[in-house]
Image 1 (tube, each protein chain N blue to C red):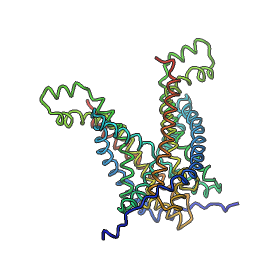
Image 2: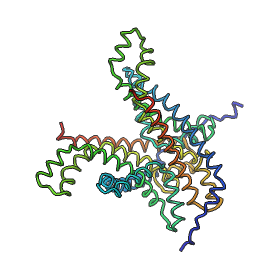
Image 3: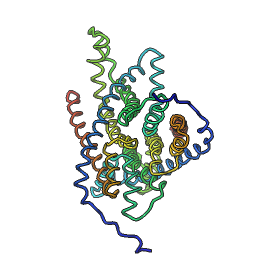
Image 4: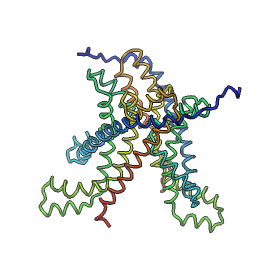
Length: 222
Length: 227
């Protein structure tokens, strides 16, 4: 019979600053990875839509391959595998950003592809008729509209990356879960620090969704 | 300086013996995700029905369930259940049990939403027709509404199954001998992280592709009456 567990929030409250710093690390790693995943995703979506089989096929293979492999495998693969093969020792945050970017890009690529396809063909034709070059019509006509269509699913990916970023303490990034594990090791109180992390994550997800809803409302057409 | 960087010698020769070891891991991964899928399919349906019920208490309870359990990541659930809850209430879960609970709790919330939108998508006329033909409540749901809703929900449910398989790799952190756990053991034994993590990546990819392939066949069969 185990001893009755005494709930004791003091260790967590004493380290609330460490939790906030850890949460901030989760947030900025998520934001950087999301930005890079969007850039990479647009590039892959364009390759897939290019019409050239030589370009569209590798892009399709990339998306299928990346979507079939868990984030955890990517984290280990980049941090331990690629590092030892290439001789480049990534810091743990660099490895985390690379893994999150690669995983995210496969999903953003599909979202952008669907969004670009769903932009009305008539707009491209109108731009061509007005003398826009191919690049200008993509940059000024297609992409802004595609972005508005893509925004809600992209928000889901952003929140998915935020949740995925809780894994990065495994390769040693000092995020909020790392702080929780340290407190668990120092004070033998597993319940409170992990609960604290859960609450912080719920709050972060809520804040992210509020901001995304705000942006969507701002961009909505009258 | 450059001489200090020793060219890495690939050791692909360990792969055949590693594949034998990973076979056991595949079994554990499939059992883990299989049990979790069945449980979250059932629990998800119950939550979806509560969410759509006329009783406000059930509806709000299900809403809170869905919102809370979708907001967290699997890793937090795993640590929380395996270390936190275990210490808090004095129950010792095995890593496998903790993993199944975590996967079920998280995915049942997602599946509840999938069921709900699918059941909403069933033409109300079907329900009314069943009503006018004198079907009872339970009969109406299980023979008329649910089969049609399930067909709509099927592709999303398969996506969720794929996520369960991929997410189950996280359970290895608390010490199961699933695909990921076996790989980590092999990496510390052979010291060949690149080869082994690449290999396990292809194992997961294969499982996922087999599932999606099988699902495509089932989907075609489910849709055979729909034109």
